[in-house]
Image (tube, rainbow, N blue to C red):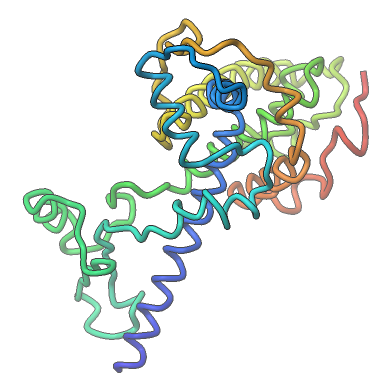
Length: 291
C-alpha cells in the first residue's frame, strides 16, 4: 500500500513537470512573438539611455530575467534563463483522488502541498476544498492551463508563424492549416481551390476566426512581455502603451522559426486529436497552393 502511494506521488510529480515544461515552451514562443519584447532587446543592445515609462520598465525587467529569446533555441533557453519556469516548484495545492494514488477508499480526497508550501490564503483554500467535495473536478483547480486553453494557445502560435511565413496567402487558407475550427479539420483543405462555392461559408468563418485569433495572439504576447501569462486582455493602443522605438519583428523571428512552427503544428494536432485527419506534412511547404 505504501509503495502504491509513493508511486502515485511520483506520477503526480511527473505530470506537474510535464505541464510546467509545456507552459514554459508556450511562454517562450509568445515572448518571441512580442514586438515590445524585441524592442526591449534592441534597446538593451544599443545601451540606450532613453527614459521609459512604467510599461517599458516592466518589459526590461522581464527581459533581464528571460534574456533574448530570438537568439537561442528553446532547448538552450530552458536550460538557461528559462529554467526558472520549471525549476521553481508550484506552491498551489494539488487535489488527488484514489484513482491517482491507487490507495485508499474511492471517496477519499487527498490534498498535496508541493514542498510543504501553500500559495492560497486559508479562506480561499477552505472554499476550494468545499467546492471540491465530494468529488475532484480538475476544471476548478486554478492557475492550470486547461486543455482548451492550451489548444488555443498552440493554435495561435502556429497561426502567427504561418502569417509571417506566408503574408500574401488568403486568411482562410491559414486558418484551415492552423486547424482553428475543429469541425473543419480534414474537411476544408488549406490548398483547396477557392472556386469551390460549396465551402463559401466555411471560408468566411475561417477568415473571421483568423482575425480573432490573431488579435488574441498579439495581446497574449504583449502581456507575456511584462511577465503576465497566459493573459489575452487587450492592452491599450499606442504601441501597446510602450515608448520603445518601433522595430521589425520578422528578421529576428526567422531564427529557430522552423523548429518552433513545426513543434506548434504537432501540438495542435495532438491537442485537437487530428492525427490521421490531416496531412503528415504541412500543406503549404510541401504541396504548394492551388489558385
